[in-house]
Length: 248
Image 1 (cartoon, rainbow, N blue to C red):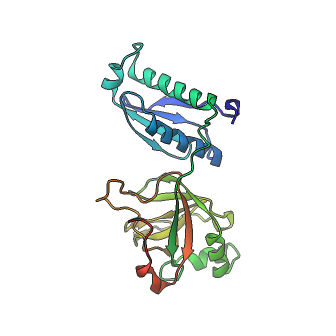
Image 2 (image 1 turned 30 degrees about the vertical axis):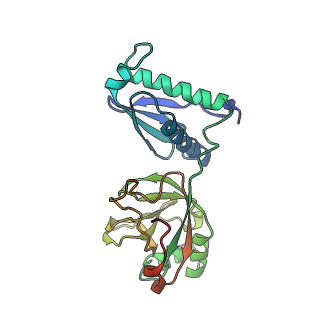
Image 3 (image 1 turned 90 degrees about the vertical axis):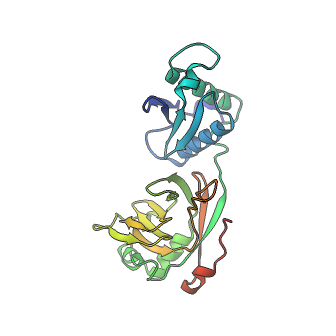
């Protein structure tokens, strides 16, 4: 892809040891793919003093060690200025070489078994009625989409999922629940999400999965990463506990 098709990223300091790289002011799938791919390329080609990158909808927060950056070979400058210069160079090179950062943002595809019964999805009937749909129609609409993990937040391993049909969008509950069961799938606005652990929450609950999304004992504790694709597979309530998990 021609580099001229890309808007130049913006850079902003985030404290003394991080820089936020912004690829756009509003969420668009292409902008998000560019941010995700940038973070992945940075992991593969880090600069001296690089610590980690944290992607969000349209931005990537890049953390660095100011001491290491300041003492790295090359022209002397403030650590933040050196990091920004390195990041600008990498982005320009990737795009100049024809490896535009939005061309390789795809992650893994993860099937998630989901029970839509009323015990697991207590808000589904009201949500469907508000959309002028039957419960079965709402379920089919939800099942028919492919969801992209656009951000991990709120709770460790909690995925924010884009791709929800606009007909199923709904505001958060007026009164949040004091306890939402682990594995609950909810809707808030145009986002879907999955509660990895039991928690208070105000999202509209439409189903529940037995898949564990967060395992702190693992080197990579989160099942899902930004850029992954989620597809939901309907299961009956009595099948939930016996469903094979895609993450071992």
